[in-house]
Length: 120
Image: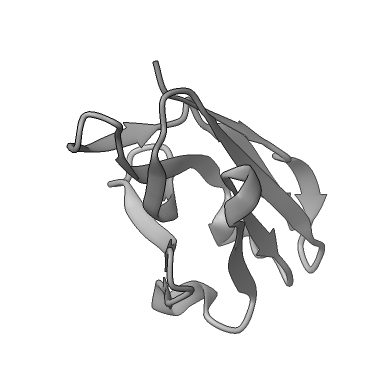
């Protein structure tokens, strides 16, 4: 059974920084891509950052220049470095993994989420 466990959320003042981490465990042959999504109360879930196994990254426009996603492939862990945080970044952040299993199939897994709150 594959599990994704997020950590690093918390309360920070505007302009501050947080680093989120997501560790993948279980029957994983390889991780093709991982990403961070967020959902604020009453709003639709949105993709924040995404990274492939080859290191290609993509970000939502509102976080470009402030957030950085990177992976430790050997440890099946992805990080989201969040700098210059704004109150608008307040949301539950979810980790996502596109995994290739030993059964030769791809699977899409989600973590349970970690709360990020940015005060003004």
